[in-house]
Image (tube, rainbow, N blue to C red; front, top):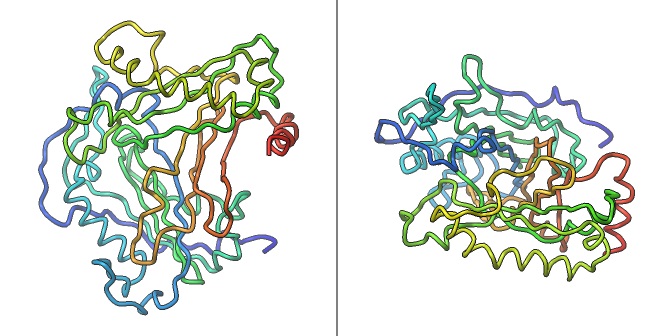
Length: 355
């Protein structure tokens, strides 16, 4: 399809979804990590679900407790209301005190839920593969008038396509929940393409899941931020001149340090700088692994998503996100924003050379 008229995506309306049953009120104080400046943003993602024969609107019955007969939007809305009974802070709002303290004000403020329809099929837009033929803003839930975006915890939009498939767009506050991550591939290609001086230090930062270290201290089902930022540094010349295996070895050494380094940091011992203070410069690559977060196993009654599209707005730092490949396209899928425009060709050639 040469182009898509975004006007053929129509938002049918939005409303607030509240927990299906009464939930506790009051406020919850966010931890130091939760209210760190880098957390105060809405993380955006698109989750693409293919059409399934016999499960269009009005075609199915009840499937695993999900009412597919009413269609994706209504089914997901009902499931959201039930889930909020257990995850009720997500239906609240963030509150900011003059002292800088941030709390989640629990109550029935609700999650903003938007329903939309597209006048074309997912196949027409290549299932939202990059480069996307549809603006992400058409598929992500908007901030309703009268709401302070800083206070919102979760917004959802379900867009149903003419083929029967649908896309779920999420905007989620990182201050309230995290996704554990770690990945290993991009450093050498990116360093070669960026043209750093051989002696210039380059850094790879990645979030590691701290839950295994804190297993006994965390309550069952804990979904708040629980990760530790590991930083691996080396001279640019060493990275660009090394094989992929050598670079992976450097990163694995950093991962092995995590339990002891995290324990020292948690005990208040001095470590080399604030681990959560990521240097926002061109020499630092922030890597995140989305393959194990559980998004690929989400099933609203139409099967798991064909793929997940993380959307990054971090223009101040080089980023790379590893996502699961399509079932019919084995290999690796990377979404990256890691070199300046004049270095894109060199970066692409470097990837091909490494393959």
